[in-house]
Image: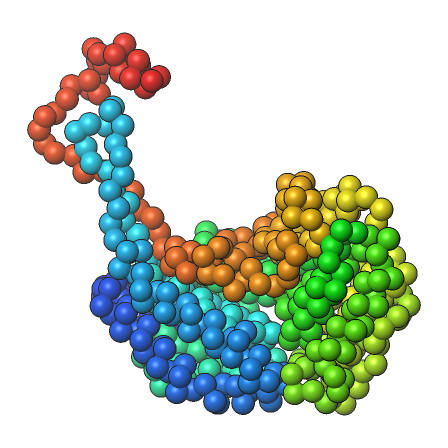
Length: 459
C-alpha cells in the first residue's frame, strides 16, 4: 500500500518541528536512539531474515553477514565514538587572525530522507540511518517495493522503535518516490541506479539540497598472467555468487590475460563446484533473482555471446545459474548495462594498457578489481579511477568501516561508513571567536600597516 502524499507532507512537517526543538542534538539522546535501534535489530532479527528468504531466497547466514551484522557493526562503532565525532574542535589561527581562536563545530543537517534499493534492503536502509541518528538528524526512510516482505517488517520495526516525528517509514511504488523527491529535505541519501540518481539530483536541485548518491556501474575484474589463478577464481566466484550477483559492487565483467584464459575458466568451474557441491539450483545459500522483469533482462544477455559455463535457469523460481559468456563484443548490451546478476562476460587482453584504455573510455565504476602482482595492481590503479578498489580480492572493501565507501562520477557522490556516515549527515561549521581586547588596528582603514600585513600574508 502506498503512503499518501498527505501523510508524507505531514511527516516532513512534524519531523522539521521536532528537529527544531533541539532534542536530537543531545549526545545522550543520540546514544539512547542508537541503543534502541540495536535492541530492535536483535528483537526483529528472525522476522527480517525470514523476510529476506521470502523475497530473495537469501539464507540466514548470508543475511546476517551481509545485512544485519554490518548494521550492528555500524551501531557499535557510533556508540563508541560519537562523543569524539561530535566534539568541538579547536583549529590553528594564522598570525593575521590573532588574537582570535578558531573552531569547527559539527552540527546536524536536519531533516533527512534515506531511500534504499531492494538488493540489500536491510543494510542499505539502516546503515545510513545510523549516520543520521549519530549526527543528530531526523529521518524518513523509504525501502524498496520490490521486496515487500522485508519492507513490511522494516516498517513495523521502525514504528515500534521510534516516534514518527523522529524516524518514520513510508511505503510504496515510484509514485511515492516522485512525491518524496519533490519534498524539501536537508539531505537526501539515495542508493540505486545512476538513472534514478539523476532523477533525485534534478528534483532536489531547486532546493540546493546536499545529496549522497550511492549508485553503481560496470565494475571491471582484471586477472593478469601473474595471478594465483586458483585463489583468484575462488574469490571471484564467491563475489559473483554473493546475492546472485545482485550487488552494486559485484565484479561485473572479466578482463582475462589471454595466456591464462583457459586456465581461469577451468578454475572457475572447479571453484564453483566446490562452493556448491550439489549445484546452485536447490542450494539454500544461493539467492534467486528478485523479480520476473530482472530475470527476463538477464536471459536476454545470453544471446550476446557464447555460453561456456552455466546458462541454465528457471523462470518459475527465478533461479539463474552462474554463467560465463565468451566472445562478447564491447558494444553488446551485456557490456553497456550493469548486469546485476550472475553472468560474467569475458574479454581478453595482451597488455595492461589495453585494460586502462578500455576502462577509462567508459563511465567511472563503483569498484575496480585487479588480480596479479601487488605492484602491478598499484600501477593500474594509478592510471584509472573508481569509487573503491581491491587488489587480489573482491567486495571486501565494503566490510572495512575504517575506509570510505562511495562512488565517483556516474557511480555516485559522497561516501559513508563509521565517522564518514556521521559526517555525511553533518555540517562542519566554522567559528571564529575574538576577544574585545586587544583590538589591533592593522585591519582597519586606512591600512596604515599594509606593508607589514602584506609581508605576513606572503610568509
